[in-house]
Image 1 (cartoon, helix red, strand yellow):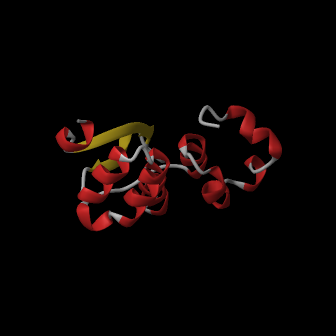
Image 2 (cartoon, rainbow, N blue to C red; image 1 turned 90 degrees about the horizontal axis):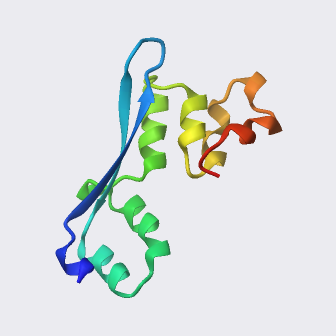
Image 3 (spheres, rainbow, N blue to C red; image 1 turned 90 degrees about the vertical axis):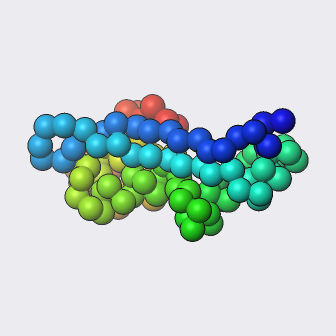
Length: 111
């Protein structure tokens, strides 16, 4: 029933902006395409992230890709994106050298 009634799911995280007061939203967007609906019907929920990565033409994006855009656009610090990311390895290159050590993972809430 969920696969036929769902239209989209949007999740957001508000992150502090880089170098100025305020926050910016990182948005994860899932659109219920026929492929996503099929994955839900079959219980293949672990494959939805892959569908989101390939569904940018439908407006989909993962949280990690949203965080990556914010870092590359200079809107948030690399450390903040790292702390909020699902796949932390993708964000280690954006960490300052003095914060790239093994103790950094102790601050993570998403691992």
